[in-house]
Amino acid sequence: MDEDPKIIICLADDDEDDRMLLHEALLELDRPFRIFELCSAQQLIEHFSKPEQEPADFIFLDLYMPGMDGFECIERLRGMGLVSRNARIIVYSIDSAGKTMQKAFALGADFYAVKPSTYADLKNLAAIVMGASWE
Image (cartoon, rainbow, N blue to C red; front, top):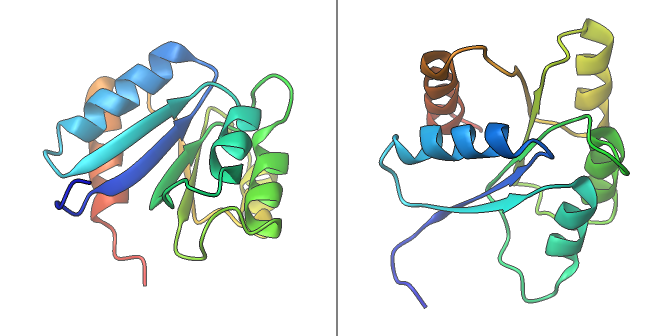
């Protein structure tokens, strides 16, 4: 097992390009991350249902994916105790509607980010989320 403390991040998004770009933006922060990419909310639930799975520190979750949507996923992750209370769920969506944001927070999201339109803005977003004080 690696002795270095790593921040474990899960990226759950059905859009492969969005996952890849966010992954790259996070790596550019040059911090000790271990990043898992999953292409559906169902895969994320299955990932954390394994008893030997290490707990995630951050979960970036798209809201609109085929099958289970991000809202149901947040509800399951929090309600079934699949993630620790300290795991930060970051909703990462194209939807900027206030009602959508309120619903995500009510279900247990910790942060809501509208997907940026430029890579520079994405890198800035990654730096803000990973540099935030979460107490």
